[in-house]
Amino acid sequence: MWGGVTIPLFHMIPKRMPPLRADGAREHLLSVTENGGFNGSETKIEVKDLTRSLDKGVKILQNVSLEIPKGKIMGIIGPSGSGKSTLLRALNRLWEPPSGTVFLDGTDITGVDVLELRRKVGMLFQLPVLFQGTVADNIRYGPQLKGKKLKDEQVYKLLTIADLDSSFLDKQGSELSVGQAQRVALARTLANQPEVLLLDEPTSALDPISTQNIEDVLVKLKSSGMTVVMVSHSIKQIQRIADVVCLVVGGQIVEVLSSQDLSKAKHPMAIRFLQLSS
Ligand SMILES: Nc1ncnc2c1ncn2[C@@H]1O[C@H](COP(=O)(O)OP(=O)(O)OP(=O)(O)O)[C@@H](O)[C@H]1O
Image 1 (cartoon, rainbow, N blue to C red):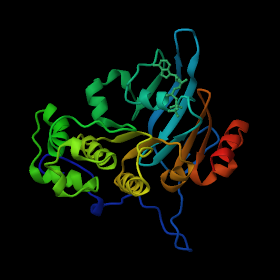
Image 2: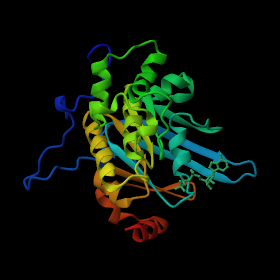
Image 3: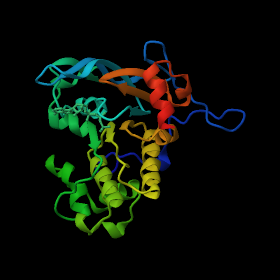
Image 4: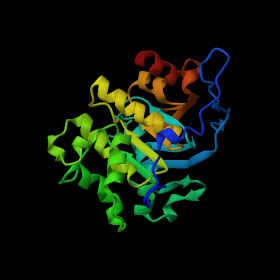
């Protein structure tokens, strides 16, 4: 905590760094239990029996239940149109489930003020949309809504966490590349001190270097204790940064696996999807 704002400070952490194995690699502590829970982490978000139907009765999510581990990165993968974004958007009430419940730290999120919830559960989309004004204005926006004025050094710190330097502070959003704008959007989200970060294909419009920058930031945020849930079409990306993978097919979760265990998928649709994707 500094100057009234708590943000992850990378050099102070990582609290949760797993121990080194004899061969020097980091031990992967998280393992998925038979019923989709986890050994090695508490549950941050629990989704219970979530269904979303369209007007004509078509179900785009069907009785979905999922545990999302605290302080880890969960990747959500699956074919196009399978319901990944719909699932992600339920987690900060971008839609309200007519049936089913989402719990954040054990609390039903329908009972939480929606703006407060979206501070706790921040979100980045495929294409960043910056507000009119400078990069610094964008970063200041969230706290300002709550009557907090970030100090210059706080704004700068957030920018550096998102891996941009101070030369960006006075630039307008329109002067930035998509990759730079995505990192400003990330800094703006972090200004709200979220506990959970939802990302819907955040790097699909980015080049490999910008992608790596974002991935590096996400891994550091995880090391600071943040819970990250990311929809991605890139299996390689998921294998690079996710601890655990949730595979959605046809509006249902067909597998939840440790990212190191993708080859152990059992569901025929999951096996086929993973084969075609790798
Ligand atoms: N508000 C809506 N009204 C009607 N149909 C919707 C709505 N939202 C989603 N759908 C449909 O629900 C299905 C799941 O959509 P969703 O965006 O969750 O899939 P996805 O797995 O994220 O897809 P993609 O990988 O292509 O982004 C799709 O068939 C989509 O057309």
